Length: 321
Image (cartoon, rainbow, N blue to C red; front, side, top):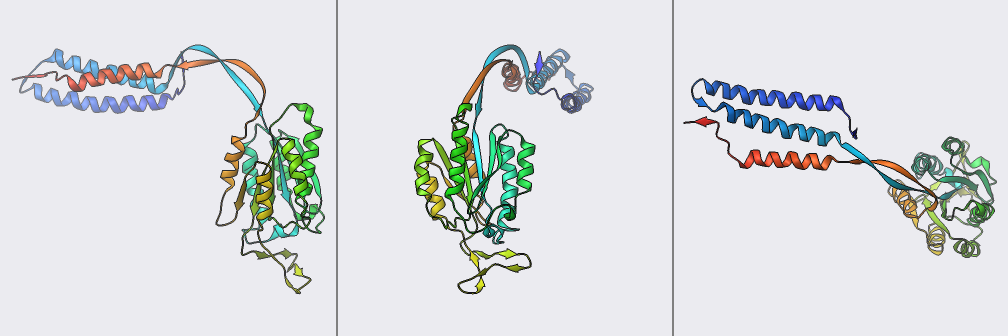
């Protein structure tokens, strides 16, 4: 017999508590026995009944498994590319401590949540680069996330189509691996200076790739730190203000049958993003049969409840007047 919850200390504590309470019960009747005629065999029957269903409850709590059965375990896989905007505007502090630092923290948790899937990292601004190819290795993924900074890419603006094209080309190169569940998490403040992403979305749809876009920032915006100063707007000669522009991100998600989410100090939709990714049906990579023990706690619980009900509804007389 296999026990699902073999916590001996819990069982001992429950037995001690039951013993103390029932000792008080018996001691009370011992005192009554000095003055009244108590039916000892009925008292013994009641004691035996209560001990019996207490033991049955303890067995049910421990989760006894009797016998085994074969179960089919399906192994599913997903490929997820995380495309992260590393333009200078991601250093803005309208989300503390900064947009990029907050994203790095959230992505570490997301990567752990999907440890059973392959994850890759694309970094981009005006150009896109593979920072980490698709891998199951969590240590490698966490290491690359730690090292993200805006100095890794050229900063002449932001092109939202470049990471999508990079993800598409990588997925096409790895078509032979058999994984058909492919997604892209596009993370940006939405400022797109190229505005030519609409050509790539049709290709993504044909390839079955969904884009889940994450807008980072606020509508009020913020200045952009650079060294000890701020980035200046050359047209106005005033500090540049970067704001979340969600229209392009929403459009990309809608055209690829994905979803749009936001992250700011007021809106926390990372959990919703994780749930949306979990709902994406993974590709069955294989299956195997395993022996699984069958938990039979219900039978012991049912018998214990039956005896407890008998104890409550049948008034055993323990005192003869």
